[in-house]
Length: 86
Image 1: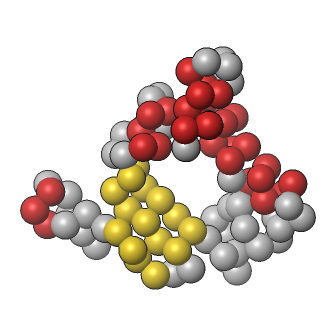
Image 2: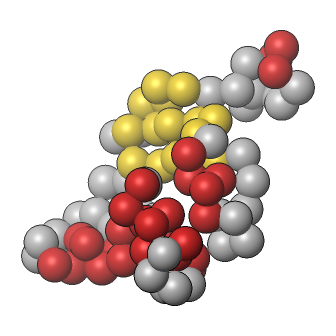
């Protein structure tokens, strides 16, 4: 995440382009785009949700509130932090 933030803040890359390069373009570069790098049926998706809009504030990528890896939830908002856990 730090690299993506640096690209946006120091290098002038758009937030959207930085996020795409860290997800789908990275998967393509490893010849794994048929398995990872996007959210679609049949893909091995690891998903994060962040507090904020990373397209408006790239540092939102540091505020991870939800993590799912291979269909298993590893981190989710609790009922006590002001968000509804689903």
